[in-house]
Image 1 (cartoon, rainbow, N blue to C red):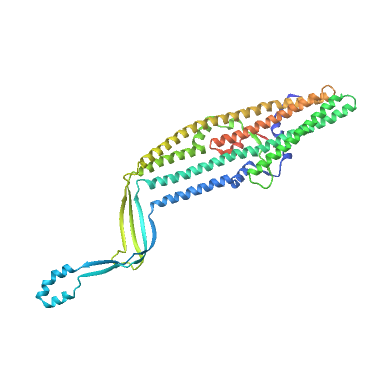
Image 2 (cartoon, rainbow, N blue to C red):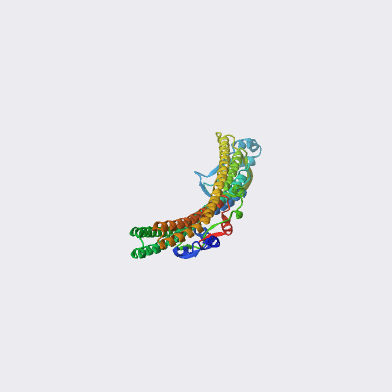
Length: 473
C-alpha cells in the first residue's frame, strides 16, 4: 500500500474505528451529562446527604435560639394538709394593759372582752395557680457561642460529606457508563472478527471443493469461525450485563444507551500534576470534612473551658390566674441569678484533656490524609498519562495490522498463505482495536477518579469537551 493510503487510514481511524458499536446498544440514548443529572436527581445516597444538610441547618437555627430567653407557662394545683394559719399570742399585751383597766373601768371592760390569742388563715388548704415565667441567660462563659460555632461547622461538614458522596458517584457512574461503551465497542470488534472468519471459512470451503486447499486448512478456518462466534456471543452477554448495571445505578425502568463515546484528552489540554495536587489540598471533600472536624474539636475545647466560668441569667415570674391564693403572696417577681460550679469531681478538667486529645488526633489524621491524597493524585495522573501513551502506541500500529491482514488475505486467495496466517492477522488487528478501546476506557476512568480526588468532579464535562479523539462515533 502507498504511504498516503496508510496515512489516511491512521488519520481516519478515530472517526471510523467503531461504526458498528451502536448495533449493540440498548434502548434510548443518553449522554453522560444527562446520566449524571439523572443520578443526582434519583440516587438515594445523594438524597440522604441533602437531608443531612437540611438537618444541620435546622440544628443551626436551634442553636441560635439559645441567645433568646425561654418563656414558659406553668400550672399547678397544691393541696395542704390544713389551712395555713398565723396564731398570735395576745396575753402579754393584755397583761401590759391591765393597769389601765384598773384606772379606767371602761378600758377594763374592753380588756375583759379582749382575747388572749388570735388565729388568722393566710392560705387555704387548696391552691391553683397559672403563671408565666422567663429565663434569659446573659452570660454562659462562651457555651452558647461555642454551640453556634459548632452548628455552623456541622453544616460545612455535612456539605463536604455530600460533595464526597457526589464525587464518588461520578466515578462510579463513569465506570459503569463508559463500561457499557467499552462492552459495546468490544462487541463491535468481535462482530467484525466473526464476520471476517465467516467469510474466510466460506472461501476455504469453496477452495477445498475446487481442490486447491487442503482439508486441514479448511478445518482450521472452521475452528477459527467457531472461536470467533463464541467470543462474539460472550461479548454480547458482557454488554447486556454492563447495560443492566448502568440501568440499576440510575434507577431507570427503561434501557439506556450511552451516547457519549470513549475519549482521549490530549496532553496539552491537561494541567500539570502540581495543579491537581493543589486543587486536592484546597477542594478534596474528604479533606474538607477533616478540616471541619478539626475546627469542631477546637470549638469543643473552648466549650469545655467555658464550664469553669459562672453563668449569669435573668428571670421573672408573673401570675396569670389563681384560685384561693393568699393576698399576702405577690403577683410577680423579677431577679438575676448566678451559678458557679466549684467542684464536680475533676470532670471539667478531664473533659478539657479529652477534647484536646481529640483535637490532636484530628490534626494528625488530616496531615496523614493530605499526604495520602497527594500520592493518590500522582498515581491517578500517571495512570492517565500511561493510558494516553498506550492508545497512541496502539494507534500507530493499526495501519500496519490492517495492511498486513489484507496482504495475508490476498495471499490465501492465491494459495500462497495458510488459514493460520489469515486468522493470526485478523486476531492481530482485532487485538490492536481492543487495546485501543481498553486504553481509552482506562483513560476515562482514571480522569474521573483524578477529578474526584482533586475536588473537580463538577468539571468532568469541561475536560471531556477538550477530547480530540472520540471512539465509537
